[in-house]
Length: 174
Image (spheres, rainbow, N blue to C red):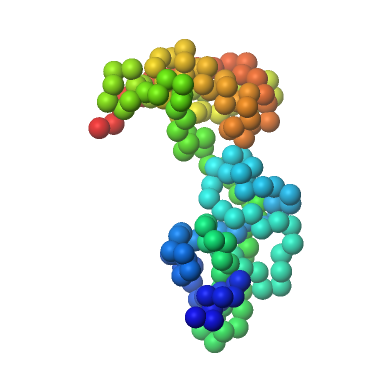
């Protein structure tokens, strides 16, 4: 029970669930500076806990996604294991299509005829190109939703205006 009270728990391998709350365990990403967890998710589209710029001598490398309990890897004799920490500069962004956006003003129902799935490719004024997965009633509303997401800064692009868009309807999988 004592190990549940400590802030950092020593483990020999990555736990599948947190022993305290039962939620999933994710990597700690170091080199994030003042980045917030929300900014990290929007920009990199990954699960992870932001670790800041300071890397301790025996750093924890995993954390609970819910309660924040941290885990440090050790050898079977209890000594710190050599680890390679995950650095922000070495991460690749996952594709934006992993996030599926829906126009909440339309409230489309999955079984209705008006519900359609689109891949909208946008190009911003900074020549950034990204493909978004959206649901809308028609192509025009899909483009409006994608434009709105870019303008509001919701997809991690630096540009704020869509100069070019293209739409492709994707058949729903049943």
